Image (cartoon, rainbow, N blue to C red; front, side):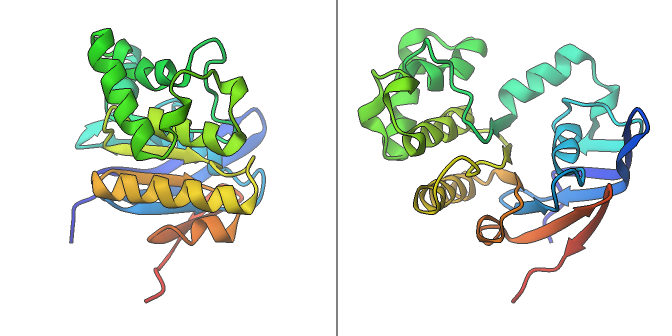
Length: 226
């Protein structure tokens, strides 16, 4: 069995009197898609943010490729998020002043790529995800479904080891949501990226290999249906 790439052990996180995570556990292997499910306010997004090193847990540990995230400096964690991790959010969060090509090339430029090489790589991913005709357009001039595919291209352009997707289809209708999930999971699996997928929708979770349910800050791993 493949060794986990990213693990969390005994995570606890509170915000004032509110317990967001309470002894939460998580593990994911390369090439695996794991859906984190649960009702609103259950701690799903907090778990994702701890796994990505965005939020530090009050207790417990998050380990990526053998390194403990909380022991890293803020600079090292930021570098990890730029190079090893990719992110897709519910509303895409594309930069409105940039073209779609520039949005997708942005993570590469932040990692030191030259403009021509970054743009060529961005174009490759936009074509791969079926939105090559958006290259020169700004996000406000394209549809929601197209924008989310551009966001997926931006997340995958650095060829991350872990892709974090937080309600990636929440702002889309069912048809466009299914298109985005098919493209996202197919592209991630082909590159052996692990996908941490936060959702409350069963139809979205169906694209995963297995599910982890979060309720009242506690996690329960569901075995895949064979």
